[in-house]
Length: 112
Image (cartoon, rainbow, N blue to C red):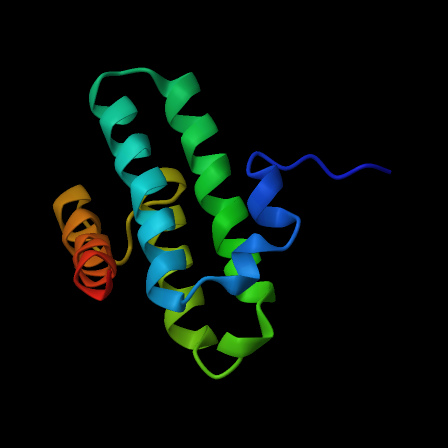
């Protein structure tokens, strides 16, 4: 059985060289795309973006460096899924997700 990856280069090992803030910034970019497609009413593209989001979350969870940070990572993944696929029991908004992930994008830019 072959596993299909959207982010082939990242999945082949490069993902595990990135800092957590860089990984979360990448996830945030895909979340932003999913929100944008959702707001435009393009559910197919939204779902494809969400597939990429979940792939990146799964790669992050698989990174052994973050084994002590899994609670936050998995709770964030759960919040994204709850907002898009569930009944939004966490009362998360698109703006809240954008703000959360924007912090990581800013931190990456400052780091450079």
